[in-house]
Image 1 (cartoon, rainbow, N blue to C red):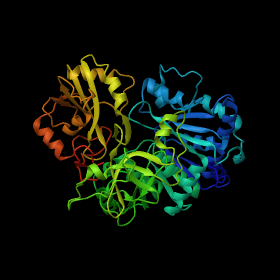
Image 2: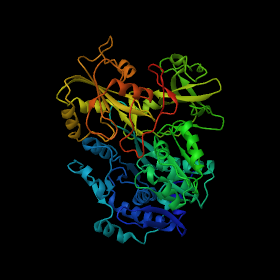
Image 3: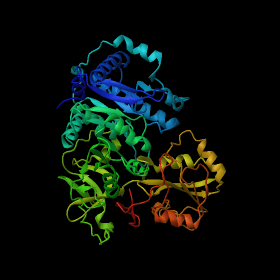
Length: 569
């Protein structure tokens, strides 16, 4: 097994252009050769050897947009035998501090853009390095002649600590070793025939596993180039693809829908792009993307931790993720018995959801390497008998194709971000008028979820909006799109909040519902006409950071357990 450090060192002496990125204040691209990337990584690895203390794990946090410094520090960490924790800039206040301290980062690499996020945070023992400053350049200058030495690292060394969210408590930091990342890069490069003259367009954020594992790693393994987009832009997508001669990209969530929502042009097929790889685009949008741009999209399912994966293949039915491979089964969580095949009507509606829906489990070998400092969460995933439980609900048809059906715990997926309802509830509980709060998902008309809150007590829309703006730990995706105001929270026989009932009723309930229309900060009463319109398009609006006109729902791609109503994901 090889290490990522070996892949980085192999680029020494390769003077082809290898890394492109446009900087905001400079109309010209930053262009580095493969050799310059390896040299920059070697300099940073030598600096790491001097800066990282010997009395703790060799971890550094990276709080950056997709700038050249991100892959340079990933490569440097590989050479130094260190690990990178990708820090999510949508986190706020104490929760952001918790992510940095939980992963025991002794260094935090950031940029001026993100300094306001760190203001006032208590980060004992963390040294801050701010890229793009004279002090930063002076710090690196003595190491300019360093050469990459892969002998300091092994395939077993930790390289990534990337956060995945759960329903109760803080995000978990999944571990990825150098050997696993190098193997994933080699596998994807082989699967998609990545060549040295390819250019991978990295427009998804590099603090997520998608961009690093599925885009950067195969490019590194094949010696292909990498073009970075600081932050995803639907309107800039095709211009970037042309600018860099990009041939491959990855996506998650609604990125494909956003690109499809841009104005069609006669020259939409004038580019070198040949393949996109990701999740949650859906069969209809994938077909529309190929018709418009002439580019094939390959959809796949993979647990963030690497414990299970499902690949799409030709002949996969609409709405299915792919065929179950060896070891993948759908099990009843209570009995651990395998669930019977799904019974579908001619329209694709699931008729036996209570029996057919279960948790996807991998009974075969898997590369799950655990969570950092979270043995309880690790035990929940990896059972004593070696099975890996994904935490995701699926059902399987008689031909063995798998369909995603939701999540086993109370998670929400908003704009491709997994959010924990309990954490949002803890914040909303501070609202002065709240006697009780419940947070849950309602379907988004494009993919994933929108946040809905049920609030028992008194509600004043202007005051509530001001309250949300004042909460330092309320992330950018957490603010409720819909607020249901009721006198008393519904409860079960055991006096627990009846979340299934709240989810099932959604916005079509007898109580007043307030909402923030797309692009608005203020709440107003949801009318019956608006509720009906939203119901017909899936139940919500579109993300505030999307570009282009609203995108309508294009048919079911998964089934909710509660009520078994089709919705897009």
